[in-house]
Length: 180
Ligand code: HEC
Ligand code: HEC
Ligand code: HEC
Ligand code: HEC
Image (tube, rainbow, N blue to C red; front, side):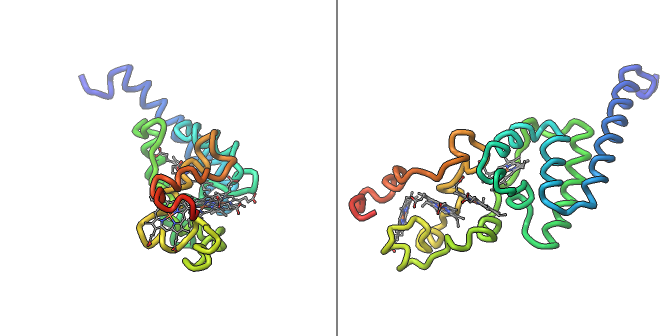
């Protein structure tokens, strides 16, 4: 007997085909729309692996300011848009064929995305030191990223509406506690 004669195979194939058509139709609609909010609806609502990320994002200060998934997770510029579409197409295939881990994993956004909107945080070291500002060049030169201190800025319901506490400064600046 051939594999394709098995009833189970046929059902699975039908399911895959149906899900595929629905997902590709949705994808086709959002493909043309480069606007981030449309992509956000696509990312968050059409593929269940994204549910937890979509929910936490909805509760975050970023969502309330209209900052969508692509603003943080896509490289800025045209090249980023193209790369992300290519990646999206591959992910769509994995989704349709049930190969996406649930919940999904994704590379952390790069600082470049954060700078695009938060350039004011890139103060020079002298100014930052005088103001005891955590956004000093010295941190970035020492390999820290925005996410070192701001992890959970979007996808953690306990922290996605707040700035981090200065408590954590003391893990490294114990000696200089009084100075910060
Ligand atoms: C497309 C623009 C945009 C991008 C990209 C962006 N942000 Fe924001 N961010 C905002 C806006 C708008 C607010 C809300 C400002 C306000 O309410 O005063 C905000 C608020 C914040 C806050 C204040 C805390 C809060 O939740 O209210 C932090 C911290 C922050 N962003 C960090 C980051 C980090 C880290 C990244 C990169 C992973 C990032 N942002 C990417 C626009 C952006
Ligand atoms: C060393 C830890 C640390 C790093 C690294 C860091 N932050 Fe922050 N950030 C903080 C803390 C702490 C606060 C809360 C305000 C304060 O205590 O000065 C904050 C506040 C903010 C706010 C809200 C400030 C406001 O004015 O309301 C934004 C936006 C922000 N950070 C963006 C960034 C971005 C973008 C990066 C990466 C370029 C970054 N941060 C890197 C610790 C850090
Ligand atoms: C303001 C920036 C920002 C926005 C907007 C944003 N994210 Fe994220 N995302 C992050 C950061 C930062 C991380 C790294 C994990 C963390 O710090 O919570 C992350 C992690 C993730 C991960 C990986 C989780 C893991 O465990 O590997 C996924 C998937 C994800 N985001 C999906 C989304 C989706 C879907 C949306 C829109 C509905 C979205 N993100 C919107 C900043 C953002
Ligand atoms: C992971 C370790 C780590 C954490 C956490 C950390 N820092 Fe730092 N910080 C450093 C290092 C390393 C330097 C660079 C020291 C040097 O070059 O003299 C530095 C330098 C600084 C400077 C610049 C001082 C100068 O002389 O220019 C300031 C200001 C600062 N940190 C504030 C903070 C604040 C505020 C927090 C908490 C929000 C914080 N740091 C959390 C490691 C850390």
